[in-house]
Length: 278
Image 1 (cartoon, rainbow, N blue to C red):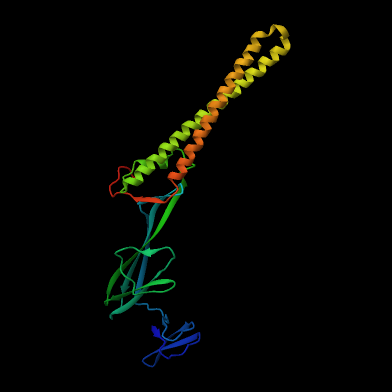
Image 2 (cartoon, rainbow, N blue to C red; image 1 turned 135 degrees about the vertical axis):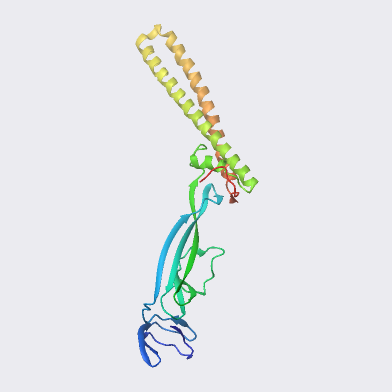
């Protein structure tokens, strides 16, 4: 039963008795009803109407990629489908209201049937079902979700990065920016490897120096060749430290370049035809 408060007064919460043709039809509970508010009150179980509910869920492919301050977000949609099969077993036409749960962050998909009304907790759909017949109602809702990771923390050979490079993006500027960022990441990886190689060589030279000094202490005046080795090793260490300083400076410059490149938000949708599946 649909109840509209036309009294101009606030009706307090409490039990309601429903009468049909001066006969008792059932009871229900009413919450506080302000003037002009309306409620649908279930007061009895209609045994002549059968409702079967079937649920389905799917995740759509990634359709948009967004980069914000170095964070890559791959956006996809979760789609929830619920099918209501309403069967009228009686010999009279029935008006059936289907209440579909309303969830924050979820909206009806474009092209879906419009709800007759939306409450705090439900979409409400109205179906008219002829006698001894059935009707189906499919309600489809969607929610946008994202999987995110930092471009600063992943390798240029990371699976996600390689997947991005394989896609067709509608915005060519986005693709240029992505390629530039991946190029800088590759250069940073090379500089990092170079820095580790130089550090390892410096450590090896220092070890050679220490051994040569021990030999000098042992051999005394006859250790000229070890003294020469110490001097040569010292020259090499100084050279390597200068090289390491240059590599670290270039590495820092590249990191600033990458940060500046990714400092703004950019995004692009994927083209409908893709060379690689998600």
